[in-house]
Image 1: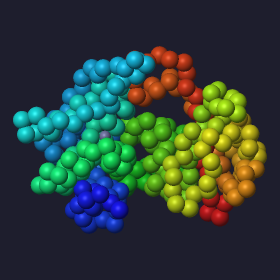
Image 2: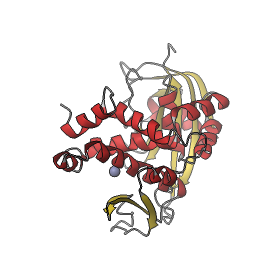
Image 3: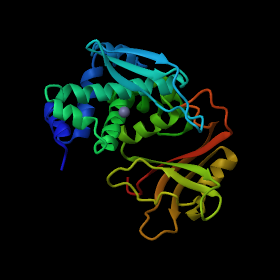
Image 4: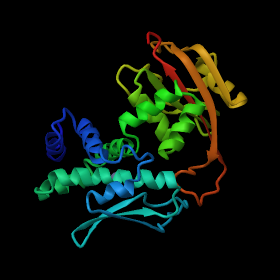
Length: 291
Ligand SMILES: [Zn+2]
């Protein structure tokens, strides 16, 4: 059952689900800005009379930033505060994420108990995910993103880097958005894990879940792939394969597979002051075999 606050948000935008409502709301909000890519989320914020400021944020015991963005009301106006220590891409994403919260609050503004529900622990994960959807759609509206992708061709290192720089978002954010506007493509992000109970290996760290996508278990090691395109990409920088299978029952073959190695400072997109060791990932894009 959908919580009443999200149900009201859904109805406000006449959508089938709160998630689709957020896409519609974000599209509506950015309609006047789509010709000005990269979209400046601070300019979008002015539509809501919101102000944005970048301020130094606290660090926790592990030296991580303790917050990624905050939304408050000051003298009856929205105010978005984002840590100064984050990279430009991450700051933009945080501002756009907080605009997602504003869209949600605006839909239930007349009902104090629904406003309270939006802030509840019970809805926290769903609301955060909704605001991330909003952020992605505000920064990378479907029409210009699709056009830019078509200009590049199919997803590979160059495509993702070009889109990320064009829309001024992180590589991962751009890569995820590709799988939404071009659903024939799926994405799996691998990380080299030394902590896993089964020993060090390249393992699946993230895969945006989508209906109909090949299911590959999180944490699976790249050794189960034939060929092991992840290790090949980590060694050579880039690797492609016409098809890759996994020796796991029920896991379908992946087609038109392309993989590349991405090295960045750990969490560099969250926190530019953080100089921890390098953070290695392999991005893999593939198609369903019958696509
Ligand atoms: Zn949030």
